[in-house]
Each structure stands twice: as C-alpha cells, then as structure tokens.
Length: 285
Image 1: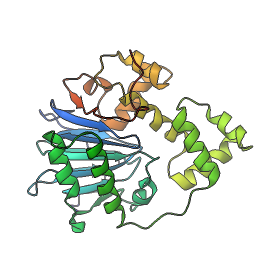
Image 2: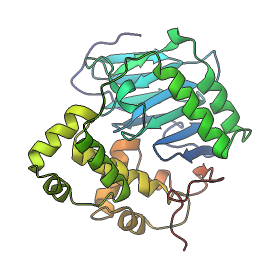
Image 3: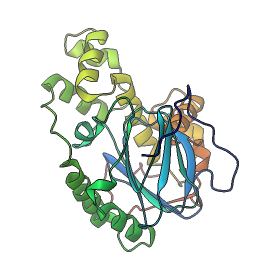
C-alpha cells in the first residue's frame, strides 16, 4: 500500500482521455455478480457491492484512492459503500462486483473498516487475471465464464474467515426483494411482525448493508439487463422499479462513477448474453 496523507474527501478526477467506460469494454451479468473488463478507466464510485480488481498483466498496477489514502496493487479488494476513485488510466483490468446476495459477499466484505481497500497481491492468485484476459478476447464467454468467475471468487474467499449463518428472517427478506425489487420494505417488515426499524437493524447487522441499500442494489441489477438495448433511461428506470429516471441516474452514477448514458449505448459496452439464465433476460420487446 502506497500511503498518501488522509483528507476529508476523495480527490477529484483530473482531466484526461481515460475517463468513463472505454469503447470495446465487455460485461457479463451473472445474477449475483457482474464481470466487467476494459482497457483502462478512471472513475469515482461508491458501490453497494464487494469489488475485486485485477490487472490483466503482471507489470502494471491500479490505484484506488479513498479518504484514508491510496492503495496500489494488481489484485485489489474494495469493501461495500466505500467512496473511492479508481485510477487505471490505460491499464487493462477485470472487475468483478459481488452483489449482497452473492454467497461470498459477507465473507469478503469484512475488510479493515479504517481502510476499506485491501491489496491482495500477497495471495499470488492469477486466476482472475487469466479469466479477464480470455473474456476481453472472447475466448471465454457464457456459462463457462460464469463458472470460472465463481470458482475464482470461491478460491479467493478461502483467505477470509467464514461468517455465521444468516437469520431465517433475513434470508426471507433477501429472497423477497430478489424476486420483486420494487416491493414495499415496510410491507416486508409487517409480514415478519417487525417494525421497519427493527427489520432494518436486523438486516444490516447480518448482511452488512441496510435493507434500503439492498433493495436499491437489486433495482440497479435489474436495470443492467437493459444495457445496450436501445431503451431510453426513462423506460429503463420504470422497468427496473425506480421512482423516475432522475433517481435511477443518481443511484447508477453513485455506484459506477459515470451516468447511465456512459454505459447503456451498445458501442460503449458489449454485453455477453450467451446462455443467460431466463430471469436475467429482459422481457421480449
């Protein structure tokens, strides 16, 4: 880790050609995770997901800046809800976002709360690098990519302690929101004979994100199904269960550092849609 003086806020992104999603970036929705590979990126974000970053060669590193300093590495883990700036200008890398519903999310989210970013180079795991390189060049796609990513994440997770089992009520709330992201959170609490405050505290204490954040993460996941399909942002917001396009744009920008318009045109991000599970496929036009 390369130290920098702590500051009250994450440093701004300076001007340059490497901002936002590069043309030719590739992405794959995997239900409880999202794999993205590109030739370089500089962005500000604060995601609900656990984020894994791995450079595609052994001679470059990425910098992740937070208010606590700068972490430099080839394999970097970023905890959920940590505001940061990713500086990987012309550095090709693969990013895997693990949603709160991912089996390894709670295991990997328990990083040092004073930092929120870990360099994992000492683990000497190159499997994500290999996966990213093959995905970028379309040599690994579809279900084979899904399995490779899941196996790699499971291997990485072995370096972290196993969390305790989830409360059955928390499992039920997660399942209900997964099935219907726009579902009323107060209604969920009522069905469990809990106040919304009690339900939220219970959920947050076990999952690591609050009930509302989990609901928003599912709406973002559903919105991503429509990337590159030519829909207006208003249409996407409505189909994903957001109140309006402004709310959708605000949440998306906070999560991914750039507005939805930087990702949704097909020329910006090419989606790998080979053999997707049925629920990920958007409804027929």
